[in-house]
Length: 449
Image 1 (cartoon, rainbow, N blue to C red):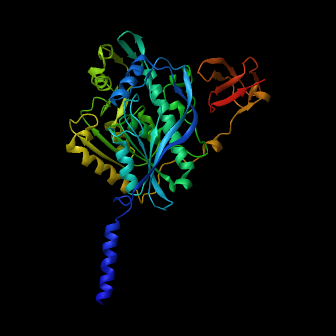
Image 2 (cartoon, rainbow, N blue to C red):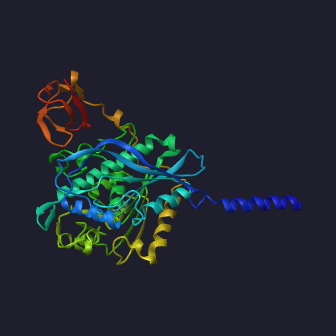
Image 3 (cartoon, one colour):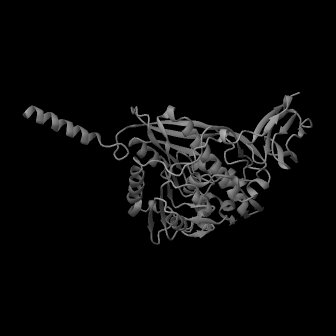
């Protein structure tokens, strides 16, 4: 009898030590760096002098680089990269995955950022049995103006956000398409973001179509293409839940697009991403001071920045709409606290516990409100390229706009076409081009005679 008791006691102690997946730290963590999510993604390339000078200082002082550019027409094709964290020695094949997106006002930050708690969340959650991933989404906005008086237009800022939405959707599809490789449940892809990353996480849950965004996203040159222009297109693009640390959405009407659960954490005194409604970064002077420190040199320190960001709808509005729609969600709103209040030691542990507890609560929850229609099957391409890529034909549609760009983003052709008409591309010189046709994915093609 004593022997049986000893065995049972040892078993119970072992189980207590082992802990529970998603709740307790169980594993060491492996990290796979720079996984390619999508290839040939156009990134702004003509850096503004500010970024060039800051880059030199950052290398010297291990400081922050803020990515500002001269224009949107100069681009280079890059790979969209992500770091993937996995529990060491874990052979589970049905794990939830948490995609973490860093903050930084869409101009700063990185996928391996410690100051934004990105690495901390990835490592801590992977140690609890999740697969986690940190995305290097495209950053940077164009600056206008001369001398020390600089200006950011709201349309340019909104286009930067749109590129980020394209990127987070690409990352979601990559994880879903490769779920067997990483032992992931494709219906348990959860999004976690801070500030700009929280905006992208919410957009990755709710955004579904280009027409939910302002028309200048694709009417202004160069066109940014469809939401799913890059990466795998065989699976659907929306996440299954989201955690938004001081986040917002660009359009409150998109909140009806999903009934997936959400955790909203926000300080009511936030002047960077407003708790209610407003143009973000109203405290731009303080933000600029953080990005461009006073010891950066007289030329940089004397800069003034006039920012016209688009209106965003913060956690108060999101909470109100989700409550009206009867969507499961949780909130942690702290009266008077500013942006990123998890840096206040009083709240750091509380915020992290709220996040971990919310994600743990999803372990037995069936996915809800997700449209699972594969993109390729939903709408076969209406484009047919001719021999040698010297022409193309549209098989459906009337008076559909099209444009052809070179790889630097310079427009080479512009027009409209109807079904059955052949568009001659013979005037193009040898090289590689991108064809954008309204309502269709961008097509990259080469011309060689």
